[in-house]
Length: 77
Image (tube, rainbow, N blue to C red; front, side):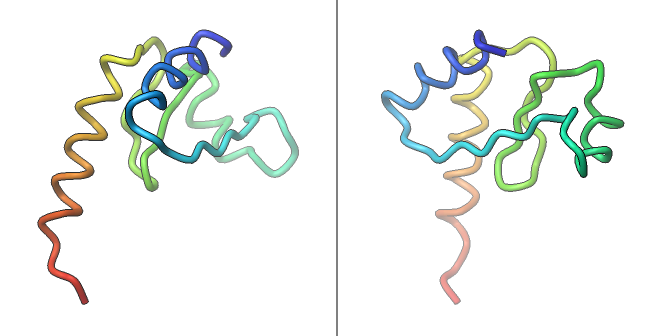
């Protein structure tokens, strides 16, 4: 897991974000454990899975770019 955090730290240097971590072994996290027991670390962006298992900073940049593009194209309500 420390490798994933190091990769996210690289991304955060140029693309600030807030990170929420969940330990799938904690009580109440059975849903996540069932889904990701063999695929940690997993990464979601506003509820959408963008990476699981092995990934690096280069995996994250395109996902952030797509998210930003989608959210900039949405008309304001």
